[in-house]
Length: 270
Image 1 (tube, one colour):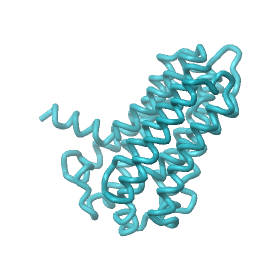
Image 2: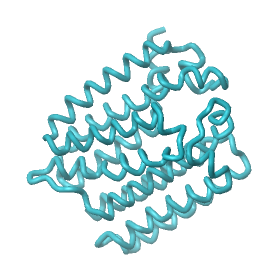
Image 3: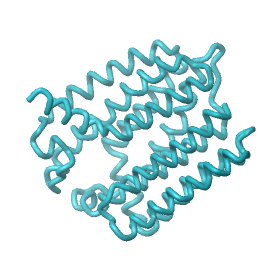
């Protein structure tokens, strides 16, 4: 029974994106010489708080549309359990972020607050993209501000990260457009429609990778070209699946793949 609850908690935390963001942040921190283990721990705590708060806040909506992938909606977890988990993770995030120094902590907590704002309200507005652009765009600076002396992350890195974030947002919402609309969640993707959202996701993801290849010193190499080719293949496959099998989660996984390729390029050229 305990094992099932633990597995359910992991699922409720939105494990795939939480782990992806954490690994990307930790790898970038390692590449620039920041305390990678501490950045990783702080980002993981923040991501867990965001994932659990999402399932806590959306519990009624998820039940209404019969979301079988949400443990709260299926009764495996109670709302109070995920609420408590989210608040504990948030408290851990505050403590771990503080250990990075005042500037890095302030920026990281702003990114987490932005993600919570998305869960609480902004996801149902035309500004649903903004927390993704803001939080992902600032995330590289959490690592660089933890250096001595601290500094903001490179502009190219921040812009690319923001583009990846918004692209991932568009790809992530694609399977849930109808369910979201039925429960009053009408964000930017819902207003754009499935076709334009798919096109926008692909364009943003590829622009992010191209931006890194062309704008980062040392990235316009054979490795950079290979990264761009892989990104194009992943984005194209995501568009194909989104058009023919709209209920599949593959476009979001492909978006994570494009992000992984782009972050790998950033890490190897940092």
